[in-house]
Length: 363
Image (cartoon, rainbow, N blue to C red; front, side, top):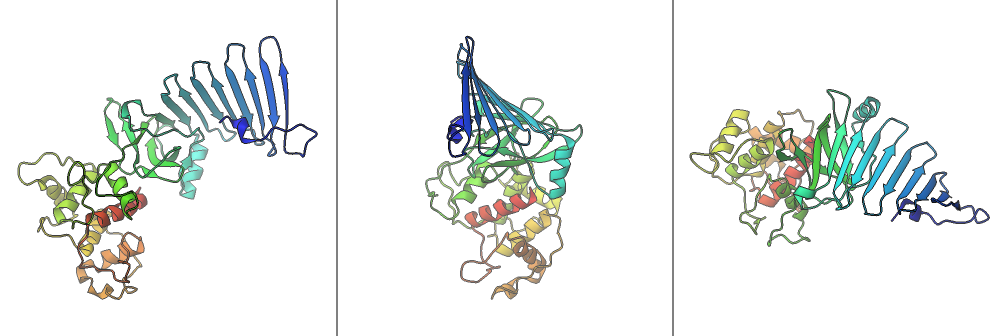
């Protein structure tokens, strides 16, 4: 759908819903539409089939799309605040976007604690990583910014994959899906691909309460399945599983081990002060989970408590502060029956849900 298709064209003698006019010459045809909101769209069609559509809103922000007969196109957005973007789509459908943000836009968003919404057409995530759309952000030298890349088909499994200078790629584990796109913090000149990296597990139905959390964590390759086709969501986690998951999220290399499968994660957890490394094969309790996340977050202060839960007092003294923090941050909530179950086991799906909230807040 073109921009002009979003408004009904009426004559100037109509009900005031907008007006349109057209002219034609020997070399091109021009149509102009004035929309009810005051914006103006001009469409110029060349004899060779090239169509240039330009819309200028009342504030002077301009969007221009040039579409060629072979299906390739280029959309340029120029805003009055200095932000701009150029999105090129070749005839095969490959999309490349370059967005430029001035310091004022970056600073204003940072002061508001918000991501900069990139003014560009939404890209479509694909599971074809090689041909996925790419987005580059140009910032003031030496700066970084949290941005929201618009994605037309975003899901919990939509991830940003950063393309490094040496050409290698890495999933950005704290790229967060929103209702309209993906948020990510980028440095000047960095380029990312937008990919649908969703995994499919036979034992996780779309209607299952934890399916979105499982999709989020598995697509970022923080969590893996118990097999190629199963996730086993209700299986209790062990301490070894959690330190391995956290190490993966932190970017540690957990693939090299001369001993047990969890040795690398265990060593990472001890070095980082996340765990003392003991009882790795024991079932992970909800309060132990809270403590490890609290340690990872740097042991932040908390004004929360667990007294709202009937069994809140069952929390061990050494875990009380961490559990209060986890409850305050809405990482851990009740079990549906008013209980906190601090001594209860943490299942794989519970950990996936808690990690989703944890990463969303940390990111």
